Length: 384
Length: 146
Image 1 (cartoon, rainbow over the protein chains, first blue to last red):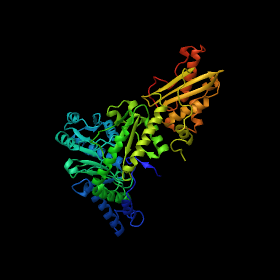
Image 2: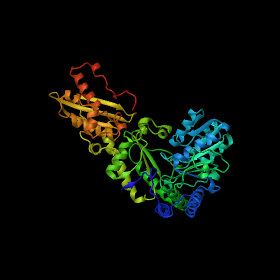
Image 3: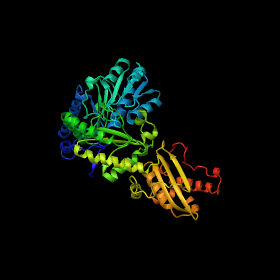
Image 4: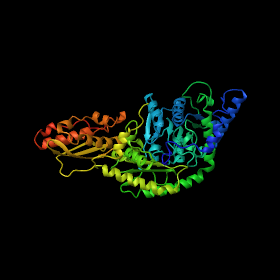
């Protein structure tokens, strides 16, 4: 595979340093962290090292707050089902922003079937949460509120500290899905007052198949899976040592390098946005400034996103993403694009570009040229 | 192994669509789909000696919608109108070496657009009454069911 990858959000390459660090646990220093012999103890030490590195990335109060999972979907399910069911005596109301990932919304909808009351907090046209609506929907019975740190489709960063203040003043626990934001912008769970926070390994250039849930000291949850007592019983099952060691090392590197990378990517992003918005009837989706440093998302009128994706790929070898209905399994338009007020026919024309380590400013003219040619080609085919 | 993504033929038609454009004063015109649903296609035909003489299309939609439109124009060109009316959605999908299951309905409107264009012509020449040119499944006004 060569070409220009602008879909880092869906998969990132593993950082070669993280891969090299983790590789020893595949066949050389393999081991089960639960075993009491020397091989097991070495594996346990590697696991705890990874835990400490991940904890540091988000300034967690101690490494024991980190529960490793198989990824974001599992961490979100554990946060929501685990916190809500464990604390059901505190209230039966759930809140989430309208633009949460489906791995947050779907477990909440499932809890709703079991008798919980679910309300979705609207966002404005730029994707920022409506704080007044949040405040009015919160009550002491709101056992869990879930608001993402930043959205992967439109890049908008939420005012998490303000959300946290409202939740803790009027409700109970706050869960934050930080899978798109961690490693890209600074996150401090203590300063932000977060109770539960979801992390993704691959979004930090760690291996796929690993994630974590931060559970603030003193916050009680219950497991979703049942088995052995690994991960303090919150997530039983033999740990994925290779992926978790890579995750830990990637988190350490992200902590060291993210500020420099943020500045670098933001400059590329801004130049790219400026160039692409020169295309007629093109619009930025999401917030112009409160957005992830590597994230540029657009919509183009009169054309459809899957056709954009396929043309960019086949003609220019550039990989992008789209929120178009036609590219999804359900054939439903993106709930995020509808939540920011786009009509269905507008949501169909979405294109998402996410930058990463291998992005460089020299690529901007070619990417902008490719986008322009793609839009022109599809508009020439379009009856609209 | 299960087919992954679109067939080579779909991609070939998507990247090099045949018969794109508009015919001024066509003998028949058909338009199906709905931009709200993500697929809208229109077909223009001219008729000579009861055959599809020229045919053009324009489509708003995903890769398969564009490939289907291109393929159906190629299949219909030169056929008698009765033969062209017999082209089904399945025929078009088969000619394209198949479509992903979830695309079989929503993006596979080419045959419907072709039939609508032929019926539009038949109404014009008085062969059928306007009410007989009733929309087929998927034509304008239908909801976006998949």
